Picture 1 (tube, rainbow, N blue to C red):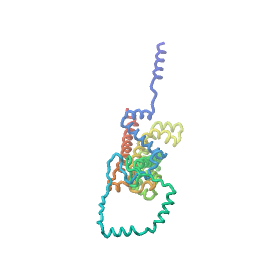
Picture 2: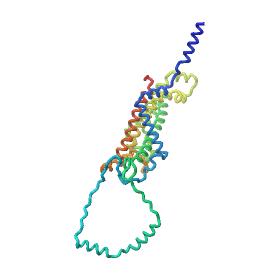
Picture 3: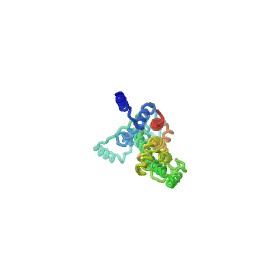
Picture 4: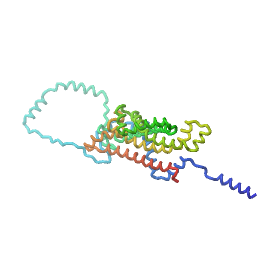
Amino acid sequence: MSQDNNLTLDQEKVETQVPAQSLSSLAWKRLKRDKVGMISLLIVCFYLLLCAAGWMGLAGENWRADVAVPNAPPTFATWEPRGTQVNTVTAPSGSADQVDDDNSAAAPDPLAALMAQADKHESQYESKTTKLKETLILGADGQGRDVLQKAIKGTSVSVSVALLGAFCAIVIGTILGAIAGYFGKWVDDVLMWFYSIFTSVPDMLLLLSFAAVLSRGISTLVLIFALTSWTYVFRLMRAEFMKHKERDYIKAADAIGAGQTRKMFRHILPNVSHILLVQFSILTVGMIKSEVVLSFLGFGVGIKQTSWGAMLAEVPAELIQGYWWQMLTVTVFMSVLVTAFSLLTDSLRDALDPKVS
């Protein structure tokens, strides 16, 4: 009887045990305990929503419109327009200039009849004149365009280019790294030779080379980033697949007849996905900076598009005249996102580390 009771108690203990949690759920719990990581995640999510709103036309759609006077100051800054005061000199009475003016006033105007007829025809049509604003929330650029609208549209372009470029680089690097690390031998030698060609050229020189050959545009930037940034992911995935292919769970999958593709992408890839997530964040930050550099040098987005780099390209001419608000706006927008992404990367690295309790 006592043995039956013990068996019953053991079964109840087994049933009341906490079920095993996945790596993603444990990582999420660790991330929630990190206040800096959660704040960074909220900032990144806000930028992603801003990016989506920009592409959907909900924000920053009217960035091309001239809504203010050129270089209109922001509302939070006091600004006195520069200019020279012209002193008018009154000619003395009886001078030669006054005599010439009297003679010209007395002469009939040969175009008076034509101008009167033109004014009569013009009065038949309604002319809509839009009054330009003297100030805006974050000021205006040299063409009278709203800097805030430009910054929102530039955010959607820059962030989208970085995210798409990082995703394509992750896909290329993962596939090539998995093939090289899993199969090894001559396949690994060929891919490593291909990898050595790309890494032998400095990153910025390689970016400028592709940008000079290809045309400007968003799709071109995504292609350039994908072709030049896959090497980082390739090196990591090659090493991880070489290590995991000798593990016991892969040998067990081989024993039950699992195919090569299934073992690579169904068994090994989920176990190294946390590394890809961290690399995606790192690549996104690097591509945002690269896009700014390329657009600043004239190799980035097209003429009819705007981005953070394109906005910074207008800054030198404005700073000479003392117009600083466009530079300040772009700098704040970009630095906040890059800092949040960097801090989120550190938090993800700690949260996804299984050694961290």
